[in-house]
Image (cartoon, rainbow, N blue to C red; front, side, top):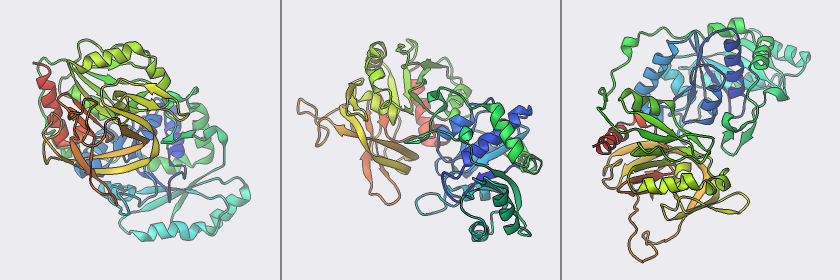
Length: 461
């Protein structure tokens, strides 16, 4: 039937539990398809790093219910087992609502929930906590529970007594263990690209076998048997003929991208090539479009500034091709980055702004086109998300005036608003550049996908 791993709050152990289960399945020769609720890149990367199929994001706000259903059915039916890792607390969604929350996904897909709860310092108090979640919305079903930080037999016995005759399966007790703790940084867990040692799959698998009742849990992991005929045909059901490749920056610095984006282009017959800035490579000469996804340019600012071959290649590309840049990719196009130690490092100097550390900006974004550009048309509606601690200082302020006191060629392509915030203009657009803090899920966004395909056609003539 498949299931969703959820919890009362963030940092309750959802990702660790999902990794334990995934490693256990891998050690048994079972293919486990994992999914992640929300726009998260780092959890998705971690869950994709241990030899199982690529983890897929399920996000109702960004992609809509139909996309979520189609993605879940398509990929879960290909594997022996499947599960979904939730986001934040069970009912936390857009702003103070439940829209696009884990509970929302559970109702859309009609899946049971396995709750993981931090039991440290609690026994009897766990019952009203869990029963409160179970009774809050009768349309969802919390069928099992796994307790974290249970470090003694006495604690385990107490919890079992509390939940006796409560019609909920206790699937396991996980003791504290530093070997399964995932390292964290500003934006969440550290990317597997930035750790010296990969997860010890055998250890995680043995830990899961010892502390989880895999016999009970496995019955919740069997994929939902739904006919693929329910999957609708794509709105973009055609192939490009003889087009130049798209170059994508993908290395230790820039890697915040959804797997569906590359798959979307490949399905349309568009060749893809990689650009490795980390190793100071030039952009492949045959490319006419460049995608620079988000990542951690602030962490590698010194390294980037010394990558002279890559930066010069980017400046030359800017004169002949089209550049689409999100978040950290946009920071690369600016004049400089001031890192956490206040040192300033030069970037590509294509757009007139500097980047520096700021306050956290996170959440979903409603977007409306302000003017016609290659990617955005006036009044078209988009949805996206932001997640960064960095901010930009426009080098020439007040109407984006350049140093010669004439209007800059860059203007904002769209206006954005979010829960509890005022509408504002955002991003940088010119004839051949779109750069913004906002991440899009391109394949599921009809306007963005169709406009991007037109860009490919234009730059392939």
